[in-house]
Amino acid sequence: MLYFMAVQHDGSPQPTDDELQVMFDRVGRVNDEMQSAGIWVFAGGLGPPDDSTVVRVTDGRTTITDGPFAETKEQLGGFWVIRVPDLDAALAWAGKCTEACGAPVEVRPFDEASQD
Image (tube, rainbow, N blue to C red; front, top):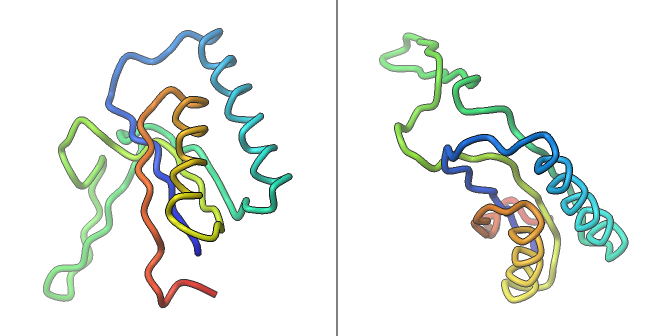
């Protein structure tokens, strides 16, 4: 099954460059482990929510606005897509990911139509 593992960024102050490097190294090791295990599909980090652009269509009219759609403290900061046999396996990997990146990780299965 495919699982989306979303890193939740809560808007806390940005870590120092040294702290970021340590986090990047830990995440790199988990990414390498996922690739070696054959479960890696795709992953990526995202820029800050303030750099986002939202596109909407209402009554046939397209509008484009700056910033995140939802005004909330938690925003998507990055993600992994993995292919594992079940939720228990996805949760085990999410535990490694949250430890590596130092942020909560939400695990969500892809719907049945998205599975290969």
